[in-house]
Amino acid sequence: MNNRLDYLHAMGIQTWQLKNQPVTMPACPSASTEEWTTLRQAVANCTACGLDKTRTQTVFGVGNTNAELMVIGEAPGFNEDEQGEPFVGRAGQLLTSMLEAIGFDRETVYIANILKCRPPNNRDPQPEEVNLCTPFLRQQIALIKPKLLLAVGRIAAHYLLDTKTALSQLRRQIHHYENIPLIITYHPAYLLRTPKDKSKAYQDLQLAIYTLNHNKQ
Ligand code: URA
Image (tube, rainbow, N blue to C red; front, side):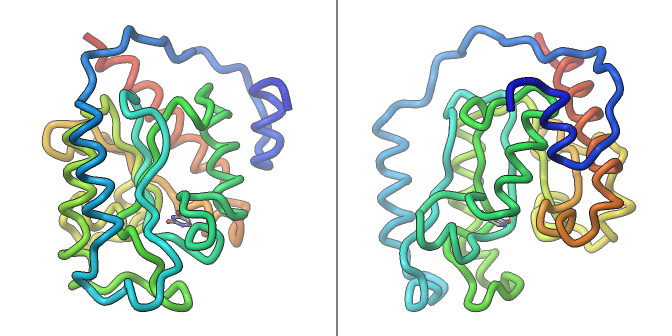
């Protein structure tokens, strides 16, 4: 696929002309490699919640550590646990298409999950697991200092907003997490099951781009 329209079609969405093209900003001074290495090691060695007993490997996060846009999902699934990278299965392919639909190559953003280990049988993360694991995510956010957070799905949205409000009511607003603008949208796995909501997800992505472009210094 070679242009945005192709990606929109891959998402299964009718197309219209995009007005706001994302602008690439000069990179800010980056967090030290040492800080990333220490954090990566801490995740790899973590046994805090017990999911180490069933994981193949930890799934740290992937992408540009100077990213303007950081995507936060739920937890690794089967493919991610096998490959050690977030969003590499079917849902991941759709996420990649969603990002490309708004002009972001996957490599230009940073992608991480609430949990760094796969819950058995892809069950929902348990509150204790979220409590024990999210300090890692918080450190990733602090090192990257993204200009926008995009939470995909209920688990990420509920954690970042500390709420239990239905995801459908959290969409279409600009929230904040520690002063960083935060947009909520559907999880790509949900969109694979419910393709009629892909156009709503595209509206959310438009809001994300709008927010990013209006929060540039
Ligand atoms: N679903 C998620 O939330 N994260 C992944 O990494 C894969 C699937």
